[in-house]
Length: 395
Image (cartoon, rainbow, N blue to C red; front, side, top):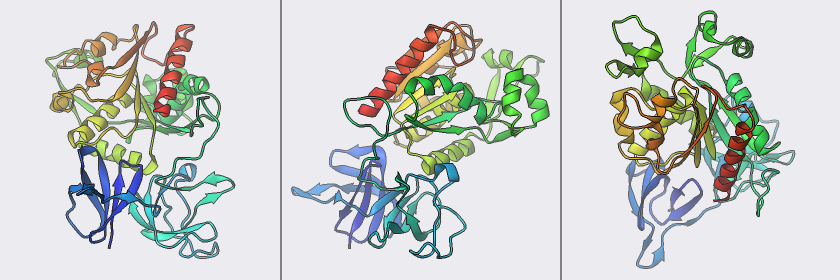
């Protein structure tokens, strides 16, 4: 009997103990001891195991564990009840990012699997590759190389998660990321654009948008935020005035639920190399990474880009960043933004937003609360980001 271990989201192995399947919690390794979370089989739900004993290696590489890397644009991969393509299909798809174990050797390009983590049918058959595109990947293998940033070695396509701001939509963040996508180069990155789950009535919320934003958001007539803030203030003042007043208690509603929703999405649609956010999207990234860090789990991506990001205003979550998180971060802030001093000086907070992370990089421009567009500074910023993303992929 064997113990299957998922290690650092990169490789899996076996240990000669009763059959178990384990997921390694990032950053939770102490010397030769590994912390795990049980996914399948019998045994403690979590704990620590030794990687070696008396000079003997207990964990070795396995080729039986796969991750669904295709199907993102279609909501997942088609699953059938048998190997043949004419067999009945399961109604749900195997969602991108799901992890499975191989039940039988690959036959005719088809994988018979059992689900370990993520969403999808508990078992079934999926196609490994189609039309030259990889759909399922063994976890110990590197992704297939694709055209992109020119480096000294072949590089896989960069996977970027982009979080929209408040009172906006995913179409808007896609438009805002256009200059960065152009700087990276055509077909270099695989983008996932995300919006919040708190919906606002379009006819009311759109009144606060510019004509262009209203045009973009009008395609689906949908405007959303990541979460709602309640300002405990009896005075009739603007939201900004309340936010900037340290005497006003600000309550961010249902954050644990919102973090769980985003965490699930990242697990299902990831892995991601880079994440970026705009405005409230940045704060949502702080919430997610802060909660994970409290559990001893590293951020689920290598590099964070914060466009017009601010600190968490709700004092109930100040403990998330009592110590800076060891994570690469770049903060892009406009000096003409009404939130510039608020964020950089940490108004109404113990910590400046950039000090949430060790060795932060701060890039400023002369524009307001927006992605930079004015030249030559905009071009300079996007070139810096291109180089940082390239360096991240090479490490």
